[in-house]
Image 1 (cartoon, rainbow, N blue to C red):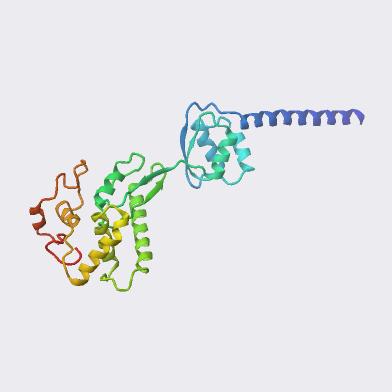
Image 2 (cartoon, rainbow, N blue to C red):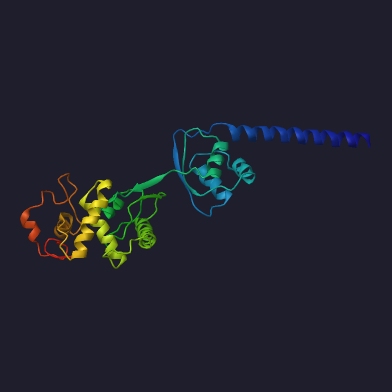
Length: 271
């Protein structure tokens, strides 16, 4: 009986010693810098489980011990999907921290105010980190200028749809706050007037005064007589980006005679 007990104790001791050694090796791998030589962008798809994430990171060279990663991840908070930029020699512990916090790589595109739909589509189509291409220009005024975030490979159409939804929401919210005596009957008319004011002056402090002038002219049934509408009549939004203005030249007096519903020198009211 004594020999059996000694044997069992020895076996337990060896098991504990082995577990301690294995645990020590695992902790060493978990905390040590990886062999990643340079920063690496990795996309973790939404819905991926721990095993898939571990295999992806292993294939990309971010980690070298996927089994240890899977064990450690079981004790962590949820790992968030997204695109991550892992720095060189990152430890497995730091990988898990980044993914717990959702410290994703920030891909974004800023759409400045005052761009036509044609210009916005060209900006999106030029991005190599967006997929697909837009050939049909969206309706003018349907895309909200803002900064939009995305992940590698997201489609241009997804961004267009997001901009359209954002514009619809913004107009719906602002329409309810309008003054009661405005000579504007629809949300579309409000957007048209706002667009004209925006193109008439690039100085934010001047816009209230400019809007007031146009509103008074609308109330009196006068022509707005604003150059940006004539420029749009000439370009249909396909402006030249060559540093010489939207026409590639100065606006001429004869341009003010163009026969177009956008010409606010020849037509009263909003175009």
